[in-house]
Length: 241
Image (cartoon, rainbow, N blue to C red):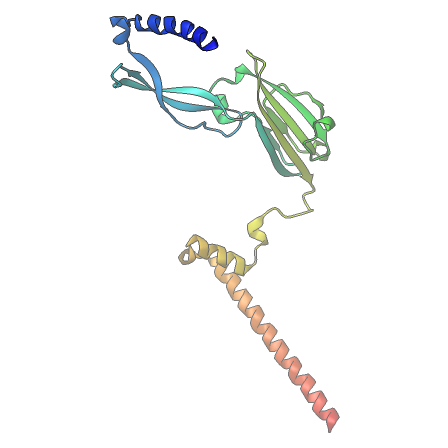
């Protein structure tokens, strides 16, 4: 009985679909669709992509193709960024990328929160930080500025959060560590780095002087060891006699 009822309902549908005719205007209609697109310009937050828009005919022909830039959002969580800043130095960071600026910075709202003195992503530890702008500036940087800053970027029209990023700021004393990496390298390390870059022929006069000082120091050390060994040997021989 159930099969008979299904057949009874199905038969009119088949008959009705067979009677449908497509108008000639619809058969010749041209649709403009995206036939190709690039990946999003950023991995998190609001970015943009380029789409190739073409008119597609019923026969599948593409014509009058143009490029269109449109916004895209892959993920709104952007992770953690770490910074180490010496006391007294000016410093700034922004939660708005260059890509997002192109859409108009007036379209976004910013909510900042701070976990002072802590490097963390635990949202319970954050307190409101008054800053209506996308940039936080320290001029100069103080020890009390250390901590984790969380920025939420929100679309003003839809109130949708499109980005969340954490900035971990460590503030150190100027005499605590020398941040000049090149200055802390030994002569051998500088030479190895120069060889890797393929600039051995362009060695500076300073590097040559460092090499001379190095070998002079090695020669002095070897002479000192030789003289010391001779003196000790003479003392031992005289004692034995």
